[in-house]
Image 1 (cartoon, rainbow, N blue to C red):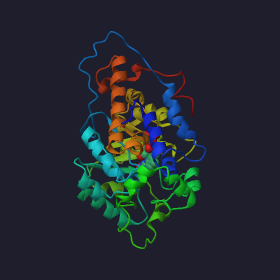
Image 2: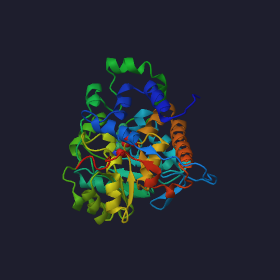
Image 3: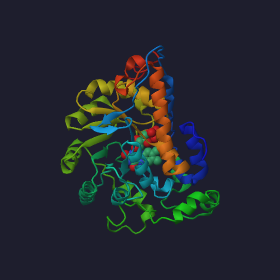
Image 4: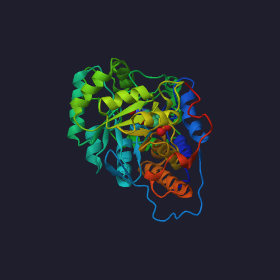
Length: 387
Ligand SMILES: Cc1cc2nc3c(=O)[nH]c(=O)nc-3n(C[C@H](O)[C@H](O)[C@H](O)COP(=O)(O)O)c2cc1C
């Protein structure tokens, strides 16, 4: 087993072991990738304030998210096509999360179906819905998530249409891949992936195939779904969806204080300050830059979480110190999965937990709930740079 010291180690292995089209699918942003890059470079601008000679015994990263006990306030974000990064990827990630004690979120665009993940994982998970124009589909998928025991619904509000990611077009991304010459040449060096993939039947969009009529070529479902995304989604429809669900709701993809106000008004139990990992509106600000304004606006009324750009426990610390009650990670765990399957996801979580714990201690703090703005050094004007 390779020595894993940081998320970058997992990223290198992910790249080496996974077909190019799926690695690229994960490791890209939309258009010029400005927002994708700034998600991480903005985190890097914020520094930590060292405090010495503080008793650091009895530390804990434990917390709660939506009232659920968590080993650290870090949830696995919904990531489409996870079962293409590694065979049965969603099941592996859900199991690793359950054992570690953090929430896992299953995407509508997953390869393993809701029922399949529920049957192979011990803990309840969250389900993320992309609303389609097909209201019957929306209703049925909520019923399926409820029947599978999903403990919260994540409604993603920043993807009514797809931001273009150039590499996906150039690579001819499909799930499963079509065996063109370049794909075959690439697969020749990714034998581990191929062998595992031959051993599973889970190679199509499990939540959709067999649940929507009139679909002949399942690999084309990505474009099919892009056409079927509900571009008319608005706050009324979101509210109706929340009523249909009837349980806890997380609204994911908020980047603006006015939108956060609306989310609080419709009764979201939590919101995720997110730009979809830089995959949607290129040119939008990084989520860490807008976090404090959103916490100030709605932090008393709803739990505010953040994702986009978290690659270390230090990043988690920064988000918590700026008022987030929790975070989600996408690529950080996908790198782990692509690198080493289930143990890789565990390794990613372990790396982040240790980094968070050590950095917290060196900042003179013992509990995540105690982290606050004073633990950070932020460049002058950082949060006021844009208006
Ligand atoms: C490969 C990939 C696929 C994604 N698919 C979905 C999805 O199906 N649903 C969704 O709500 N968000 C999706 N996201 C966004 C993530 O949930 C999350 O917002 C993002 O990854 C956070 O940024 P990070 O990767 O820098 O941590 C996806 C992200 C990636 C990288």
